[in-house]
Length: 267
Image (cartoon, rainbow, N blue to C red; front, side):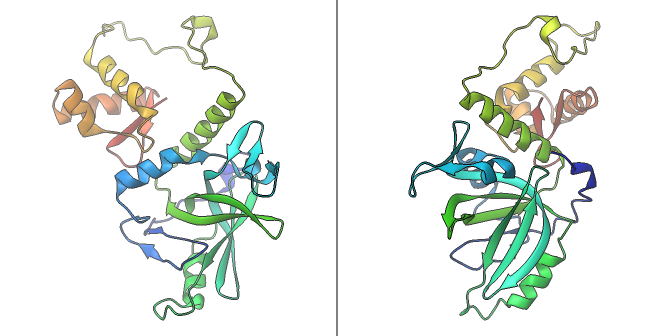
């Protein structure tokens, strides 16, 4: 991620958008990609998190086979980037998306028989997001005319910059796992990247430690973040107390917010 600092702002996030190789689509104010948040979460868990460089460097062993790079299979994939350029060609909008490791073109097709959508209007809409909007992209990696494409792609805007970091960490974790490198489970202090922020006034079984443990246990399976209500129910504590504990853990750098202000991901 060479130049995330130069990416600019996320923008106002006025909706998710559905982009497909086969159909038209448009922006939905509820950030919908054809389902609710739970369905989007299931979709994200079924996709392989990658960087655009991995996509560009991947190869096929045979024309109908899956793309691979360093033992990582790229079939149904996801990446996060920012729209850098928008052009039109015949009945499609072509977007250049960059993530700091490389760039790739994705297409949004406009159905000719859809009178509710104009190619010009859609071009203007997407052009307004150039250098302003980070987006999550998911779909099937395919090759057409010797060029990699994302088929049946879905898009939705990123509202929290932590999601960019989380995605790239997930891509790194997946890469290491495919190399057969196990997670380092050692508890020796000298092998830790960070030193624990130990508060002598809190016992190891304190409520805040239990909150942190709940978040750690569930962050890997709840990719958009662990809901605050889940913590409340799990530990049988008040919502206010749970919120205060989570705020304290954020300040200490042990967790960060997920999809919204009431979801959390443990580091």
